[in-house]
Image 1: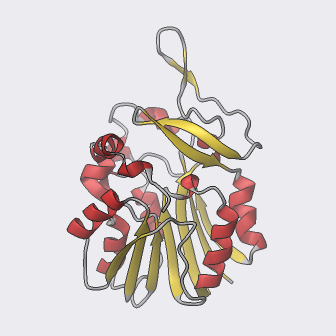
Image 2: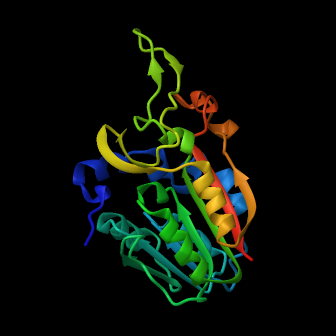
Length: 243
């Protein structure tokens, strides 16, 4: 079994103190933009890749999905999901995104929130999602923006007094492993270009419906450091349909 950084007790505790962990969807800066991209869930069979605490599984179930399967590699994440976001149509399963497999043509919606930058081979994921979806099925995901992942450090460039000067972008076309500092811990992520994300969908037969670079909502812009998030894109939201 692969291992998840989120099963590290120190890292998991730090993650649990984030606003998005404590407040749920309302604490996620991208939620307003992501909600607008959500498909119709009523009667749909849904797979959430990297479901975390299960917020989005619960959202799909609340909107009358027929079934929701949430998979995550972290047992600690799944414990929270089962405790806080269970339901008669929701199933949680421990599995890596790279290892999950379901019958072809068995899903109406495949969703993923901020998980694919932990996956080494996104091409394999796109191939499988294509097989899993029925014609007209939706593939909706959010990832860290390629501008945000390119350099690897994921931190601002500052002057000697600690004032933010700019955000570094380097080695953009060199896809692959990056060692980032997240919550004061070393985390392995994978950088890929915008072309890989978008053209990879198109060449597999998906039809792009929306591509959004979300900005922090007005209600959050007075929070510490949030206005600086207007200086560079941190996330990318993509909605596609199986033609």
